[in-house]
Image (tube, rainbow, N blue to C red; front, side, top):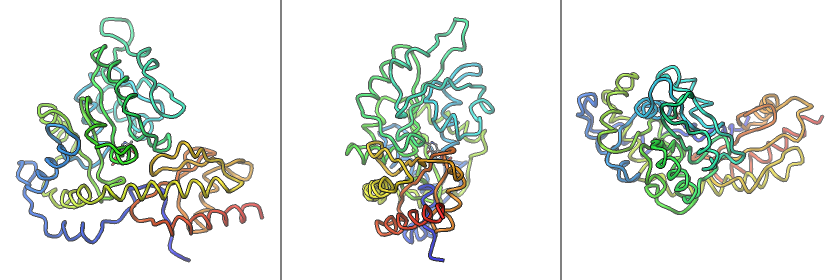
Amino acid sequence: MAELIDLRSDTVTRPSEEMRRAMATADVGDDVFGEDPTVRRLEEEMAAAVGTEAALLVPSGVMGNQVALHLHGRPGTEVVCEARSHVVDWEMGAMAALSGLSPRPVAAADGLLDPEAVAAVIQPWGGFRPPSSLLVIENTHNMAGGRVYPRPRIDALLEVARRRDLPVHLDGARLFNAAVALGLPAAQLAAGFDSVMVSLSKGLGAPMGSLVCGPADFVAGARRVRKMFGGGLHQSGVIAAAGLVALRGGLEHLAIDHANARRLAEGLAELPGLAVDLDAVETNIVLADLVTTAEGGAPVFVEGLRREGVLAVPVDARRLRFVTHRDVSAGDVDTALGRIAGAFRERSR
Ligand SMILES: *Cc1c(COP(=O)(O)O)cnc(C)c1O
């Protein structure tokens, strides 16, 4: 069969030749002793890109978020976040297991938190309800289909949090996608947050790694918690070298990924079996809903897609997620659309 077109996630990219060369020749040392020059360079460059004083490399985005939650939160308190956010749905209950925190989910149809709804659930210390210790904002919002927060909405949320003395963490696994979509520097979207997590392994296309960014004293705390969570790495310059290539060279590619997502979404919207909200496609994620689940829902349809040579993720019984990334071209998108139409023909046989 022709090669599979993998649209499950932007994490499926393989390191480029340039990344592999950089990894092979990286100058390294033991980062637990703070002696890896390539890691230090990456941390400095990412802090500059995000506009924070300091940054710390961690193995994964989940660890980056959880290190931040652990530092901001206290056992028995709540983390206010959108109902479908990554910290709720995809981190294996880590906030409870590792830090004694419980989520206070606030639903938003488009994934973007409403400042008034957030204000309504923040609890003070000294009452009879669990106090809030943190607000998490996810930008772009993964399960809402890569939605982007307009900066004024962020300002309104930060203002609500500031009035109630609540720190705010930015889950920016795809912050650079948001920045490219808005035509703003990432630092402008990260300004005002108490901590920021950004990933190298999503749209930027590096094989692994995320960074926790913030003030120097926060990042010093993050270094301690990273070690506690088992994320102290040694010659991690090998990873950081690929991350530097991704950070320095990856951004212009995101605009192509976004154009490819739009192309995919428009093609999917033309298929009678799928419903797509085209206005919701702002970055590199496309959500599509099966018009009927009568012939088996999304998990069954995804198996049919695989037989046609396209990989996607079933989000629930009806919904499919497709993600464009550095390893798919506009031509691949067209080929995928043909194969997806083929999967519908097979299905109706
Ligand atoms: C993928 C993702 C993470 C976690 O990153 P991993 O590197 O897979 O652990 C966190 N937040 C969001 C919004 C993500 O999409």
